[in-house]
Amino acid sequence: MSHFTPVASLVGGALIGLAATWLWLTVGRVAGISGIIGAATRAEIDWRIPFVIGLIVAPMLLARIGWQIEWQTPPVGWGLLIFGGILVGFGTRLGAGCTSGHGVCGIARLSPRSIAATLIFMLTAAIMVYAQRHLGLGGG
Image (cartoon, rainbow, N blue to C red; front, top):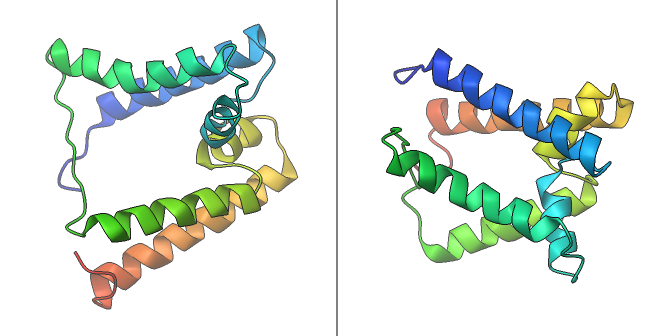
């Protein structure tokens, strides 16, 4: 925890919660990013394209006004990054959602499926961090 940022984390979490609430109240949809992007690529672009553009443009605007945004990519090649992206896409289809859909919106709605999915991907993440840091697996 060398870069612990409680204020930025609290503000970011509040903004994610507000955005998810706004989308639910105005459009009646869950803010699951993988589902939004998946539907936007199938020509269901109504509100989805502006939503995705906002995901990309907002950090750029914050960086422009002086917010420090740390960006770190793992020291791997493009092939492994693309393969990892494909696995993430497969996993979000298999799990019927992603961290934002299950972890933010699903848990807020007390969905048992979302609670189970979130527990599984958080446990998997903890195991992978342990394997990388303590067992020397996974590079970095």
